[in-house]
Image (tube, rainbow, N blue to C red; front, side, top):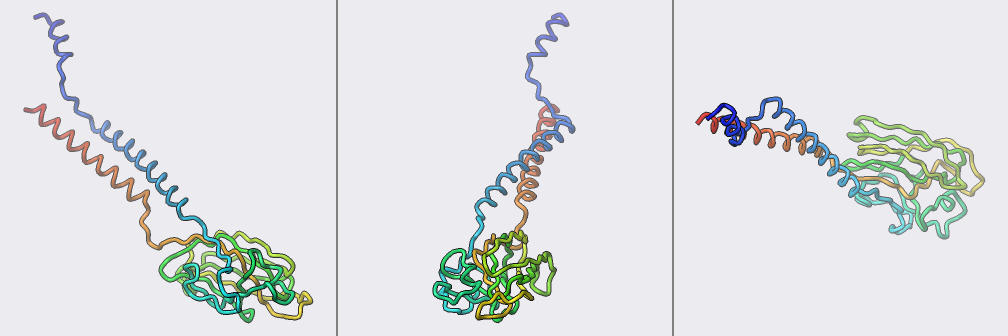
Length: 241
């Protein structure tokens, strides 16, 4: 048999191909990239499923009772509901975005929206001064309650003629505080630093949820890496037999 004929026969033999370390690393890199992409897609889907909730207060009695803890899955402190259908002329009536109820801060004092075991994103809300024009409202967002970390602080100014939509985008908080002050009497029969709030929009989340991107990507890359390693070892054994 000539050397040329032997070379042709050798080329036809099905020798196992052992991937080099660089090839294994490259496969791992590609696998991790795919896993990351899939995890991002999963995260986007989960985000879309967690749709924003708009609290209108219209399913409450409207009889100036306190908003009860648990309403809309949140806790409420010093917020009262009010049916403005036949209420006296005021910013409460003017500030009604979705008929027929609004909520307001009792006695003009600070009012709080919070959670116990979860966190939420405060997206936006309509605010209207009840009695005073140019009313200042300080809005603060915390994690860990009032004694925890203050993450956000924003001051807005509202009037009593029309509701104003404010976008806050306070992310990952569990304690939201409204404090009103100042302003000038708008000429109504009432007075005080009360404000009306309507169409409160938020996204509720869960604390301490592991990142799906990290878990999914790491587990997938580790599993594939282990499989490639075992395959390489087995191919080496077969060649050595």
